[in-house]
Image 1 (spheres, one colour):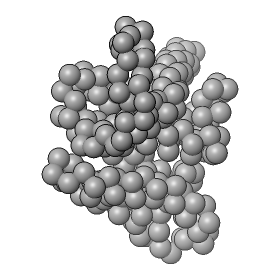
Image 2 (spheres, rainbow, N blue to C red):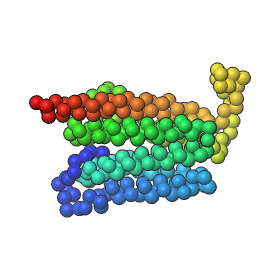
Image 3 (tube, rainbow, N blue to C red):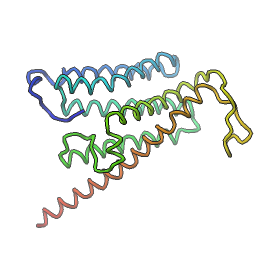
Length: 231
């Protein structure tokens, strides 16, 4: 979503009432309902979380079509995305207590990466945070790629969540060195988790990359500011 504060066709409408921001409020409500049912009713939880994730694409489209891009909307979209992912990771940490460290690390990486990237973009007065000089990050923010990666990442988390409740039919035997050298039954949901795992891995790699790029940009900005003060 762009970060222009005002646009001509919406100048008489409160930013709080922009259609994409109303969609954002709905996403927050859906995420809260999803968390409420996360342990007691996995079907309601997945339905609410899935609809919220789908609306993430709708609000950006609405902002462009209706000319209702705003700084508030960009902030709302970013915070909603981050808190949704963090909430699901908290639930997964409860369902998979052996992996609590990993889920906490993923939450920290997600927040550090995106907020550092947004802050660095603001310092450089970029019109949108969805831009970068690095080709991998630039590829990630290319709309079709961004949609596929974000969808695959969400589906990875959702399938991992679903796997804690139902596994589906056994499709075959999985043999993996060190993990399952003699073979282990592999269910439908586990296959789905494995299929989306490479997308999840690419998303985390991009998070690490854009975090360090942003840290470098912020450091460079501070050095330039210090030099201007001395001169």
